[in-house]
Picture 1 (cartoon, rainbow, N blue to C red):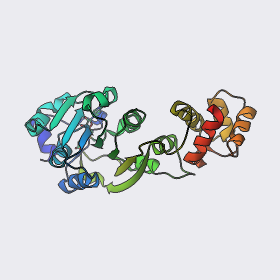
Picture 2 (spheres, rainbow, N blue to C red):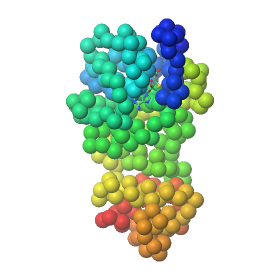
Picture 3 (cartoon, rainbow, N blue to C red):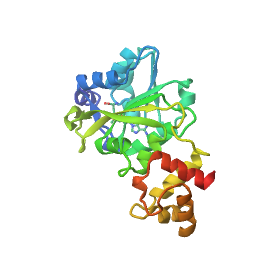
Picture 4 (spheres, helix red, strand yellow):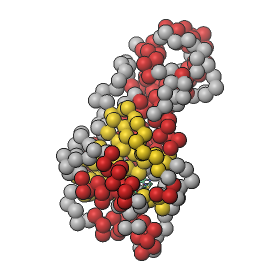
Length: 271
Ligand code: SAM
């Protein structure tokens, strides 16, 4: 059902502050679920079911759907639409404060969501920097964020490196603002992220890896030796020696490094 009419019927409006842009094109919803390869064996976590349009399609394909929604105003709509389905459970709360492992009671799950854009990075960190990670994620995000997820060396950012450490991402569909109500100001894209059973590169610890990467990207325009030196509280010369030990020219900039080079730098730092 059209989200605009549904909201009107319940006397509600879409809250911009909660990133509420509801998908209403049935073809787009079907396509997202088909690109997710969800089967009757899968447990799917949906973040922000909204008025339940995507949830309803997911429920037709998945063995189990668990949806977490922050906005309790939407509860009557969601209960009316999905409450009768025994394999769908609705939880009201903040996904960033939800222990996903405890909620789902399984280590094998997928995430399919049209995420609230204001917390996309925080959601990715919450789901990936965790002992129990999803097998894959199919997320509707801002196109600009999707491009950062799939970026290659020379265009890398903190988000690119930290997600590519865990998953291989591809943009599988672009979405025109017209397929949402209300229309967002930006173009969107659906990204499929296939999570590796183990990170692709060897590092002594994930904490050390993220400290080094964060330091590297802490000062965008600076050469690696300055950014890493400042970020890790080392003298620039000392940082330069460490970076050379990893086989990297210390004058390079963070956006040019490959994942393997970040791993080598972490090993030089903490190995
Ligand atoms: N899935 C619906 C759809 O595709 O039409 C709605 C997507 S809308 C972009 C994002 C949804 O996330 C909204 O329903 C919003 O209320 C919800 N949301 C916002 N912040 C949240 C949070 N911290 N935890 C859980 N849900 C949140």
